[in-house]
Image (tube, rainbow, N blue to C red; front, side):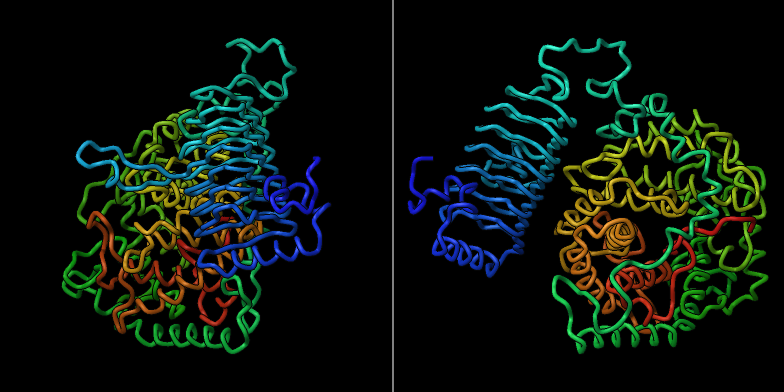
Length: 637
């Protein structure tokens, strides 16, 4: 480089020279540039050794630059941008929308990563179309050449090389060398140039021939279902074959969130709260728990129907099986006892009597015995009753009277076929809820001293989940135009609650899960003030809590979100009536009026939020039922 280092434009255009050549005056100017960014309205974090050109237009909502990363001259950076270490945004590059880069991502000059889009419906002019954002994710060690365009919704895997001028419109797997408009995968980067590639019968996707199991090269989405199990069966044994032992030792994964114990040092947001602030928050939690305990009898009374001898969610609604179970959970949480309307033995007798002895499933009051689905669990209320009735009986010191035969007889091939047919692409919550119910039924069968399902079925479940999780989101499923990440995040909670969490197994790709969930938590369609409901908040805080037992990744942001949600949640309590579930866009569900379902869910949410902040102990309760933080116990019930 011939240009002298005192030239004002040198480092803006060649930031890699700054660390070794900049004068003290130039370093001071860069510090001032970064201070202005940090003092701006956006959430900005800059790692060690970063450089941001003075001529770059940087106007973010969120900007996190990893160590030794730089933004060069005349780059245009807005919205929500996160990078790992050693990332480069070279001159005249545009990075906008929601964009997440791994470590060592090098972006050539004049490229555009556009993590947003406009609608194109014919009934509105283009300038009036709504803006959507699915986001762009780029893995580690990726080289994006000059004049490349990457459009919204694309994931580029680790170690990829994208040729100059390419337009990337579809996901690229790890180690891809891609080029063209639209970009297509030319070869695996690990292959020598000109090497003979395996034909269709070679038995592996290009670049995976040396991989012993499918687990090392996860499918890019659930659409590539079931077929991966055969190729990956050798690796499934890592999960399978030892599930009984995993259950027995599940306590090794139990324990609290690593944020620290209650007290003055609790971390809330990105700043350490002083003693007075932490004590004030702890006192607010203590006061809430005390008031809830004092009022729980009134809360349960308003949902008890003396005319039927049953519980309804709230006055004016019909009694339901779930309402009885919610009453048991609430009384256990706040009183450490059973609801006073019936003796404990009668609670047990009524709940056990609901189970159909032939299928082991539980119908709604007055409904016929449910028919099993293709792999045991049907849709609708009977699926959730496997959870709520089973855990209510567990809290009462009892268990189902019969095995869940519908699951006990499910074979591995039937299960894998059903998993592949679930609506992952557009109804991931529905798919995740089905997995939750099936895995919970298998758990109750094991607890009863029998087999979970037919031989190999439980191992097939975890094998399928491991080989079909998206490694760049940590999710099963895809975002939708209507709801963004809502379906996939809510489905992730239900799926992992019944499978990985309940069986004490680690969640795949925990850091990617945290990235996806925190991005989803910014979606104003679901988390603007007045729009939060119990389901959506629970389905964010539980994966954040669960994944934090495996990694500290973005822990400060998780705590910041938890602090805001906790403050809002405590104010939703209705004296003597409990919590309302909250609004739902389609008008279904319990709604805003306080009732048993909303109360049971929000009590668990408050505990999870408080535990993320290290303050759960002051509540004086800990969920032991459906939302228990520890893996469910093993052994005969």
